[in-house]
Length: 184
Image 1: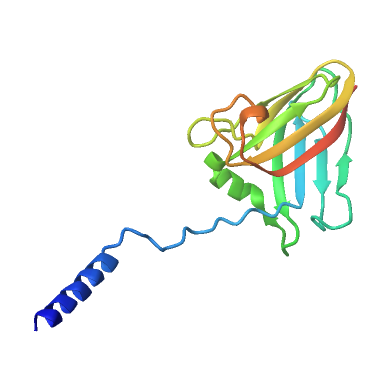
Image 2: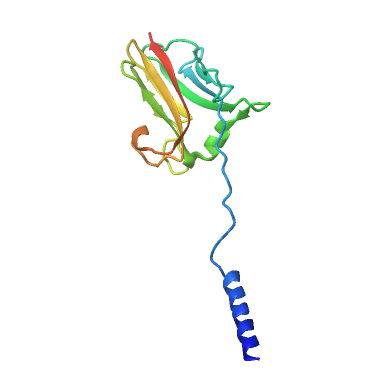
């Protein structure tokens, strides 16, 4: 009889420990990375005029075809531009606007602007995340003197914020595109 009580007690205690386990086997929800096939940068001259469009499209993703990169026109010396960036997933029909997700998850994203040697432009983000750190889907661009060079836009997922730029931001690159730009 004592043996039966001992076995029963051990069984009940083992159930207690299993039931009270602090292990949480519930998996965390997976936040799928965005598929971005197209980045469009629209530069609208302050005071009006025809917008300049910089675009990269890579409809086959990691497939054999290179992205199609276009720049619709040159920048004008001394002109200020209001810029916007949109991200699309054109593998969906209709195309999915990833920009909405980037802006909704603003604390987890940031767009960086890299101006190459020789190009006289400055860019400043004009929209922020929920904590007041730059997001960058909207920005101002100032075209300086006659020049040409590379302008790169990089969307980072989960960068460290605040940061001093792309060099110390960390995170993962969702998309990066480089455009050859001229100021005339």
